[in-house]
View (cartoon, rainbow, N blue to C red):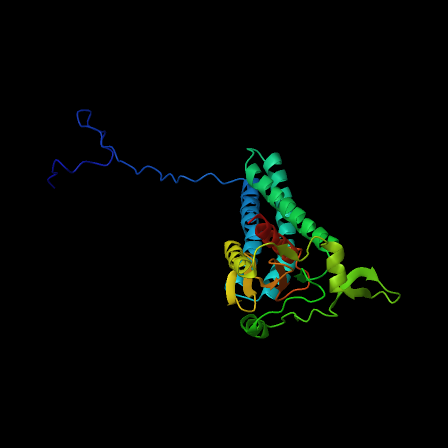
Length: 305
């Protein structure tokens, strides 16, 4: 049998002049693994996210409560009662609690992060609760009334335009002044609030609210009174030069509360003019002194003019 050069016995030693055959093998695959975030850092991150969300949401609820009621998205009862007095304080407490937790996490977990967020989360509730407390104190210090006039014996009356608007308002306050009573902080023997005449409560709280007597003629005073009302940002609803009456409405920025104002000008002794003004809220029990303040500013402007 003839052997070919390629046929070599299995036990033939390798040819020293022949280059060795190298078999290449694939390098083992190396997978890069991302470093795992420590659990404490992950927990802190979520604490900061929740804290930041509450820090933004808690003041936003108060803002939306007022603006939403003003533009008619919901009633003032929902905006002031539910959102401002119920939901808002709960969110503020939650913000303060999360702020404290975030502060501890930022101080104890290294590297220290999120301290600014935590501080803001603590400051905002403090400021908000201070404001709420000041408002409650103001309510307690003022009579629970919403109808103020310079003439408590013969108060000015509103014209048909404003009365029609008031009649179309749900839960509107009455404009009957004579005999109107309001509750006080005093209690009777049965523990019920003592009711007193609004005129007496007003006189005690705002003794400076009185009829203004001007030396100028009624027609001159009328034009100036209308201009002062416009300058104060009130919406003029009706004017009656012959009857000496100017009706207007003032609207608050928050919640859109409307207070109706009527100005009455009558001849005084000689050539002078008696100026009386009345400001009453359409809804709500306490006006927080807004009507008295409004009347005071109007009288000051008329005196200075």
